[in-house]
Length: 365
Image (cartoon, rainbow, N blue to C red):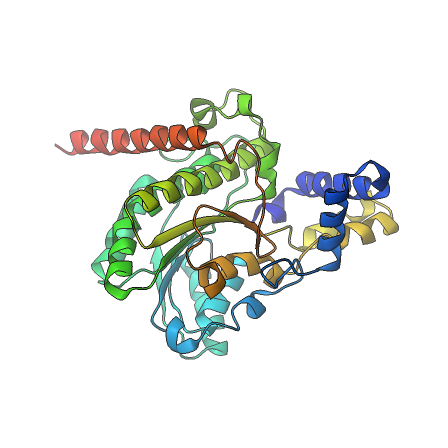
């Protein structure tokens, strides 16, 4: 589920804080004003792409003869920008493995993709990213196929308005968005490193994050509290999970560089994508303000562009541990750049997962 499809309050906050800044432009720094106008106009950055660029455009330079050698896993691919990412990669010849909780929805997506790209090779496997046991089963199934793995796109996202817990008894948004993708990446990393060594093709991992990671304050980023919050706020929980996605990319990038692995991991902000919810709530705002807010929104293909750019475009070869928005490297928050915080989060997460697996083995004995 895409955050921008369910959290209208966050949409309003983001859009209108930006609009307010534009209307009071005399208080904006020159750099921020330029960045805002650049976004609204879709002006290309140093990569040659910008906020109006589509996933089709960023992958046009990818040769089918090269892409057809690749295998990609995309989580959250049954709807939204995940589905568009899957469609584009399949169109470029990439073999897709689509993990899905709802295999019926996945089958509908597969059929739609194959209508457009009859040659597409698509494998569907079941997964619940909020469940450690389900992730283990998926990885065992995938690895048993004997396929290479070049690209892993951690795209799936959960936003929960009320406090809910996973079957492992962790807050559901954090369990799905961060813990699940951490474990999935951990269990598939050796396969990616092996594939890169055998093929000479750089492995690429993409963590889909969000600009809302900027909202998280250091004193609100406590691992135990994120697992089991005492006072729950859905937007804060989502933002914390998206910050964790970036910190994960930063720390794993450092580790991959240290072992000279030919695998890169980066994080991306896809942008806020146009959905029916913005039209449904149009009555809350005036026509003129609605028009201005709509200019901040992206189409689904524009929303998938940064993911596809980092996953497939040759320009991103060798780039590791960075944060992208609008298909360009950009700044993330100071907390997201904190190497000590990234390493601490990684240690806490790995200890939690290993402790849980140890407990399961003890129960099985």
